[in-house]
Length: 109
Length: 111
Image (tube, rainbow over all chains, first blue to last red; front, side, top):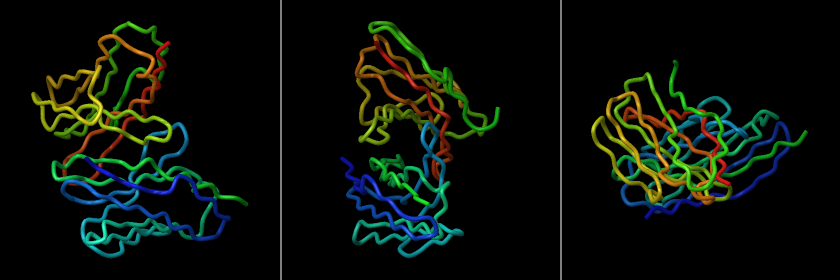
């Protein structure tokens, strides 16, 4: 089976930086994804890592270490609209996505 | 239609009733998926289809069935609903290279 772990909740101040960690143990690996999900809405794609290293996209960056089964999502210059759940997902050997339970980030003024 | 359309948006269903959740995509993606999302458990895969005419079981398939008669449609059927099937259901599609595109979800309450 798949095992994907991420913290349940995180709180940060507007303008600050928050790092959401994700560890995984899966049968096969074909990439790691981060999704953002606002309350009552569908998940939307944020980032994709298939090789080790850092991928930067504006205020959001994602890092992957395949040997450690580890990724993080870095949110910089936090804004109130960044309050949401962030889902770590791994594409397994059968190319299906398995999701962690999600990390709820609350941004305070 | 742009992307994935799910219907209904929400539904209250009596236990024991049959219900079909509809999902249609216009992106010509080969693969489609059904997930349920429950508080504290995240998204769990119910059934999937890698291409029209084929389906497979995911992590939590019991009590659900799917069909894939064509590329665009992937309905999910609850043959006899039970309260534990109360959840938010998301349909998704993929071109197998990138990640998934999700529909807006169906909130189902079984009473």
